[in-house]
Every structure is written in C-alpha cells, then in structure tokens.
Image (cartoon, rainbow, N blue to C red; front, side, top):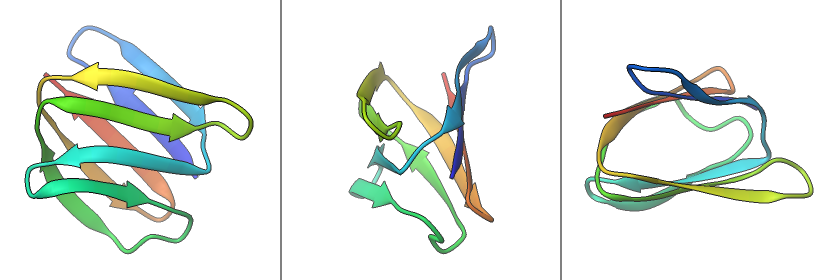
Length: 77
C-alpha cells in the first residue's frame, strides 16, 4: 500500500507500508492491504505504520484520512 502523511507545510512521510493504525474519531482502526474505501476524521493520537521491517509512529492532534485503491492519504492539522 502507498501511504502519504501530509500537513499544510510539508510531506511528513511518503512510501510503501504493510499496515497503518489511525486514531479515528470513533476509535482506533487499522488499514490493511485491499481495505475497503473510506474517509474518516482523526483525533489526537498516534499514527503507527509498518514499513516492512520497521514500525514508525507519528503523534497528531487532528486530521482526516482517505483510503482508496490501496492508497492512504492522511492530512493532519
């Protein structure tokens, strides 16, 4: 899957991942390969993603995520 984490100022991450765990407004959820399309708001918490050998983490305050065709775009405030 392709993951992009962007803010108004810059691209924070862009690359291939195996899974992404996100702090959704209705609870934490994980996106895996071939996930169903979705759009969700995000709350304060950690975005955790597996790059295939290394797990990375980014703390966010809020944002939105779109999942479509194995591409995940996270826009943070």
